[in-house]
Image 1 (tube, rainbow, N blue to C red):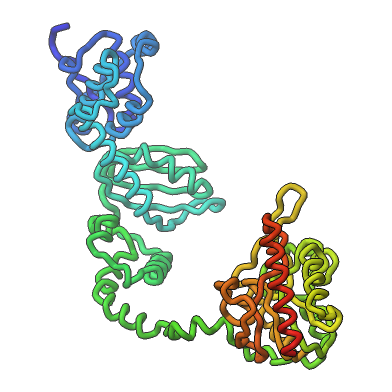
Image 2: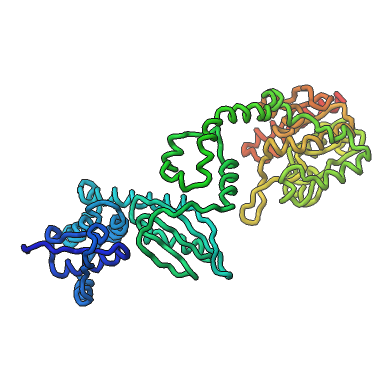
Length: 481
């Protein structure tokens, strides 16, 4: 269609709703974008507002189809302080009626321009939410009242004000800007035209802002350009804490040096490695109450999280003075329920090895490197789970107490966990089979496999070899003791 251009003048306040109604009317009458001349009442003082009739709006409402993403981008772009803030959105609405895939076309110049405007407006709205500083003024007796001044780059006051209404619904407030003013009284929003910057208002909370900013300022992470990108200098004059920024930047280097000098020094790496094996000065070498006090202390042990899930701690079993100390890994399912070591299937293999070696179990002190059962639940079963190093280290003190009480002449370490707890080395147990090594507790150690390994071997010949190795280690221990 051809003809003279239509002049549309939109108001400063309510321009978004006015633009929507006008765009519907123009589309209903098939007015092309090149025949629509858009102006704002602020740009053309004295011009009346030309809006569509209700009949036009109703007739066009059902005919307009737009992607949801395009609607959101247009709502943003209408707030931009650019000459084509009204014309560009209408041109895209016009094109969207016939051009499928317009919104997803990355090469389209109109869509690219719309995305840029949307990004500028959203950033400006974000800055308003971040940098508005309210100052208290006298208000009604039942509600506190506050005022603020802000200088946005775009016409964002109407779009951003609902955020403040939701967040500060329990107070009355007013935000003045050169591009429009927003006020909220008794929960009701209202808007007015822009105003000049008011006289500076003093507020006791300004000092709170300065105190807060001083304490959160981290000189070690200072990046001036990045800070100014997020907090441009144009906002500083309205922020009470901004007066501190120059002096904080100037003193940042010296503050970092002072922080570094005051930092705690770290122990040497070798010292850190040895700490798990060092006795706390608060822990005596031997509990003064003997066996009874030791068992009671183990029963109440909470040195690692395993006590939270196990039924009970399983203490050692045997005479107070025993020539042989046998150390296993940890209680199994049956030991956890019975409260005694080596009473399950692995215990029966150990009993068979004692018999083969000619060693009386009643004359041996039996214990475990870890006193609580560690397991994983599968269905109704509790499946053994190997203890971690931290749990072995946590229980090592109990093992040291037992060794000091029993005073054995030799220790038998069954498996990798026991070997780690007794010698500090839990590796290559098979290669160390039957060897006598020094221990962390004084008496020598014979390293051998755990009887539970016999139960896991499918080859009968291999299992029989492991039984002979276990019996030989016990036989050697008996001769040495």
